[in-house]
Length: 191
Image: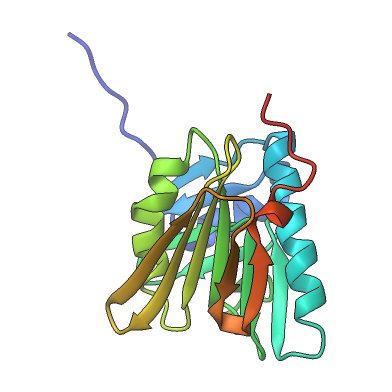
């Protein structure tokens, strides 16, 4: 007879206590703790390219820009996660009782990995959409030139666009910012 061990579930508070002392970042999904693996050079470079472009464009504007080290709490989905790039309108709002976990992003970008791309496009995007302040989502492929752009147009309505041409310029609506696809892929080696 084969017996299966019950999977341990954690409360949000237990997760946060463990996360403070953890050597790696972990995502929290409705009671489960999932280790976040390290990224590839392309993953890191694309995220840095986007962060650099946005940082310069947001100077003097009422936004805060965050990298993958900043945790996000999604209360309706019971998820703590670390988006690759995240922007929040000032003043930033924090998870109750926390000073290290944001709750009010208006823009999120994820660099797609083979292991997470389906989750980033489906369940994670569905969770992000439960955040009232969330307006725009960018998914950037690290293995080829391909960008998916979702913009909230009304309650429960999103406009989807995708781009494969590096010469195309896309408009990030949250800050009226123009980005050329080629700039996202600057210094990227697809070989």
